[in-house]
Length: 254
Ligand code: NAP
Image (cartoon, rainbow, N blue to C red; front, top):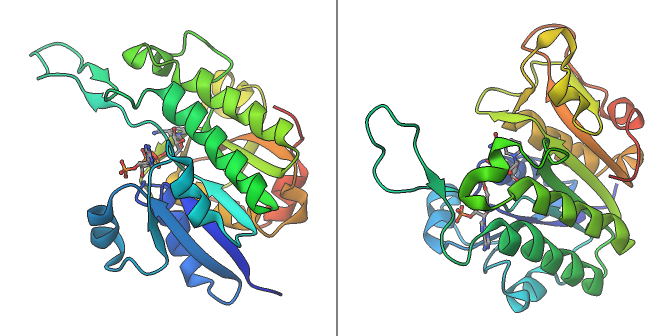
């Protein structure tokens, strides 16, 4: 199997860093490069800047350098909500986005930049991690800072589908910082798993399992030109190990 050169953006993110580490562990199969906006975070996470680019997805030129010669791109960037002021006793914390970092700029324009630059650089396959909930404009995440984050994410997904590049779009349920490889994974479409999860399970999944799905999507032909929602059963048997079979259950288009 030839070595696939992959760029992972959001390399200092909670899921992005797991993807980078999983790809680094499979160095005979993948040559992984990471992209992040903070040099100090990169040093803290990885202890080196070797095979990392520092840049901003709002700046196309920094992406152009990073994408040279890559065969695949994993998009794991996302607007990051911040705490607004000091939480008042008895009140839920208020969230907002930093100026210039609203979801329209990051989750739409930033993803469009990545897709356009990837296409120009000859990247053959893009794996994009997004979120379930995008069919509901009233979803509480859309209300954060009036940012409509899930709406912008979904628009970027459509842009990727229309780009003509081979795609895998993974819309995760609520992300958990729990061990991976211990659950059965479930795929769906149109937020059905969110609105009607089977057996009333929480529509959530460990970040580590999402990262494993990303890594497998880079290799499995059945993951090409697919978009799907992704959650997990709670820990227990059976455990998903057949990723080609999982992807075969999914379909193309939003
Ligand atoms: P995360 O930790 O919030 O990571 C987002 C990454 O994007 C960070 O590394 C951030 O950089 C980077 N980023 C933001 N703006 C950037 C810019 N202008 N230029 C370059 N990089 C930029 O992500 P996560 O929680 O692992 O989530 C991964 C994906 O799953 C996201 O799309 C998220 O919306 C989605 N999702 C989340 C949940 C959930 O429960 N949280 C549920 C379903 C789906 P810094 O590290 O410098 O901040």
